[in-house]
Amino acid sequence: MIIGIGTDIVKISRIERFIGRKDETPVDMILTHQEALFKKGVQSIAGAFAAKEALLKALGIGFSRGLGRLLEIEILNDDGGKPFVVTSGIVNEITRQKQISCIQVSISHDTDYAIAFVICQ
Amino acid sequence: MNTDERKLMIKKLIVNRLNLSIDPEAIGDDVMLFHSEEQNGLGLDSVDALELAVAINNNFEVVVSDKNMAIFDSVNTINAFIEGQLVTVN
Image 1 (cartoon, each protein chain N blue to C red):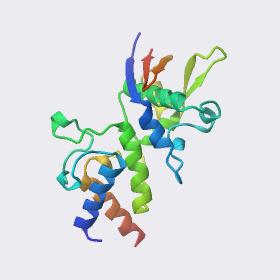
Image 2 (image 1 turned 120 degrees about the horizontal axis):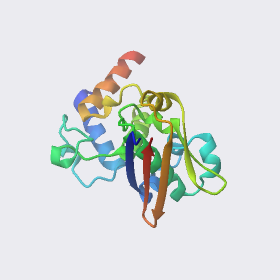
Image 3 (image 1 turned 60 degrees about the horizontal axis):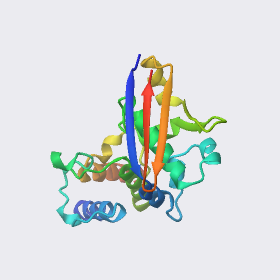
Image 4 (image 1 turned 135 degrees about the vertical axis):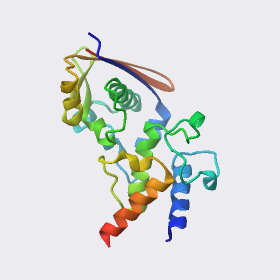
């Protein structure tokens, strides 16, 4: 059964501007340490951001529960490159409350934009 | 810095940090920053929220907490949050 869906689109240049600021470490607000090991390019960082936003929408909370929720959603890739989601903290608690057993995510980007779609089952 | 000066500083921070093409003084103190323009808001989104959190942390030497995202509602709520932090420090 589909419990929630969410989608998000982000302009890659906005993420590039945000993470590119000197004397700040804003990328730490988007990616966990584990994600940062693999996501080096701005396209993949923007894609991960869109996926996290899409999941927050699918859960019906958006940013209302805090910016820190971004770090409770990890977007990682299996050996074939397919993205998968790992949740922790409050986000994980909400997925349990909603009895979500499977989160599917699809991410795409082309030139200026990254887009993600999430299905919670 | 009095309240009016701080509110103007917040408005300039919003406009400059987010590259908005509006006059900072045209932002009403109670305008809902994340409501759409159709709802008479400023139409900010989640990337803007990240930008604002970093900018407020750096410019006012406060720490924006996850616990109350309502501080981002308007210039008035941001100002009230900063004033509250100042009282705590003092």
